[in-house]
Image (cartoon, rainbow, N blue to C red):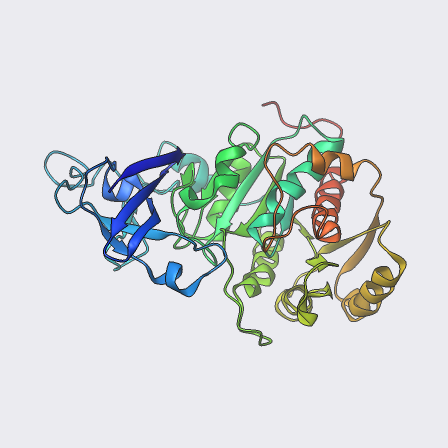
Amino acid sequence: MLAVRRRWHGAAEVEVRTGDGDLRALAYPALVGDPEPGDRVLLNVGALVMGLGTGGYALVVALPDRLPADPLADGTTRDAGHLVKARYTPLQAIRLGVDEEASPHRAVLESATSLDGMPVVTADLHSALPAILAGVRADRPDCRVAYVMTDGGALPAWFSRTLDGLRGHLAGTITTGQAFGGDLEASTVHTGLLAARHVLGADVTVVAQGPGNLGTGTTWGFSGVALGEAVNAIGTLGGRPVGSLRISDGDGRPRHRGVSHHSLTAYGRVALLRADLPVPDGLEPHLAREIDAALAPLAERHHLVRVPTGGLDRALRESPVGLSTMGRGLDQDHAYFLAAAAAGRHAAALLSPACAPG
C-alpha cells in the first residue's frame, strides 16, 4: 500500500500498487484493521472491474501481515453482540443488536409495540436521503430525523460519504437485515423502525437502501421492491407511510423517465397498506402530465398528495452534503430531488406542533 488518501467515518481510502498499476481501494478498519503505508493488502476488485457506478473501488479483504485484534482478549464476542451480519461470508460482522439482552436498550425494545403515528418516508435510492431531510428541515428544523438503512445496496453504512456528511444532522442511523455499521444495529426493518422511534426519539424516519442499487430492468428484479415491504411494516407498526416517488426528467432510460417503474411496482403491487404519495407541484407541464397519467392506477390504493414546492429548491441547495443520483446533480435531475424533498415536506406537515425534545 502506498498511502492513505482520506478517511471518513468507518472507512479509509487507500492507494495500492499492483502488478497492473496503481488503484484506489477502500478499507473498513472495524473489519480488517487500520491500514498503514507499506502494508501488504489482499484485494477484491470485482466491482472495480465491472465499472459499477457506486463500486469504483477495489475493496481491502485483509492486511495479511497485520491482522486486527480479536474482539476481546479471550477471543469471545460476548460483549460485542451476537447479531451476525453478512452471514457466513469471510468478512461477516458480529454486532450488538439494539434489542439483544446485552443491549442497554433491551427493555425499551421489549415493550415497544407501536410507532405512535410517526411519519416514515420510504425511498428507492440512498441518494434521496439528504433531499428528504432538506424537505423536512425546510419547515420543521427542530425535528429529529432518523435513517433506517436496508440491505438492498451497500451493506456497510461506512461506505456512504453522504452519511458521514450528515453526522450531526441526523438523530442516527440504524442498519437492518444484512446491513451493518450504523449507530445502532437491528435484525429487521421492524425492530429498526421501533428503535428509531423509541431509542433515537425520532419524529420522522427515512427508510432506504444503502448506496448502490440492484436492478435488472425487469418488473420484479430490483432491490427497491423492498419499498413496498417497508410500507407494510410501517403500517403494521402503527406508523404513517409516506412514499417518496422516484421521478426523473434527467434519466436517459425510458423505464425511469417520469415516474420510475420501481415506484410503480413497489407502491402499486407490493405495498398492501395505504400510503401517502406526495407529488410535487411546479414541475414542467409535460412531465406533470406524464406523472399524473402514470400514477392514476395507484390512486385507488394510495393517497396522492399535491405538495407545494416553494422554498424547496433553496433548501436542497443548502444541503450539508452534495446531491447526486446516478452521476447527476441537482440541476441535471431537478425533478428527482424535488420529489424527494416534497416527501420530506409532507412528512413534516403530518407532525404535531411540537417535536420531541432533542
